Length: 162
Image (tube, rainbow, N blue to C red; front, side):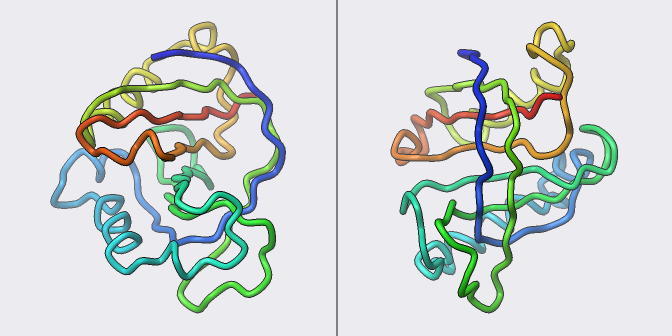
C-alpha cells in the first residue's frame, strides 16, 4: 500500500446507502455491502444520477459511525456531483465534509481482496502508522478507470483524520 496525506474539500454524492457493521460483513450470508453494490450496478443507478462530476468514477463511503470500526456505520455507494438538485426517487445524498486524509493506494489485485485486505490492515494500525488519529466522520474508496478490470483493480482508500 502506498501512503500519502492529502486534504479534500467537501464532496457531494448521490447514490444509495445501507446500515451495517464489520461483523456482518465478514460473513457473505449476512453482509449488506455486496448486495448494495450489486443493486447499484445491476440497476444502472449511476446513469440515473444527474450532475455527475466524473462519470464512471464510483465512490464508496463509510460514514455515520456509531463508534469506531467495530460499531455500526452507513455504507454509501454513488458518484460525486456538482449539484444536489434533482435527486431521483430511490436515491439519496451524502456530503463528505472537508478534512485531512491519509490516502492508501492499493493493488493491483482481485476484488474483493484488493479492498478487504487493506481495510484489515488499516483497522490494526496505530495513529502513528496512520499519520494521525482517525476522525470516524467519513472514510471513502475511489474506483476509477484503474478498477475497470476486476481481476486487476487499483483503488484509493481515504481515511479521515482529526
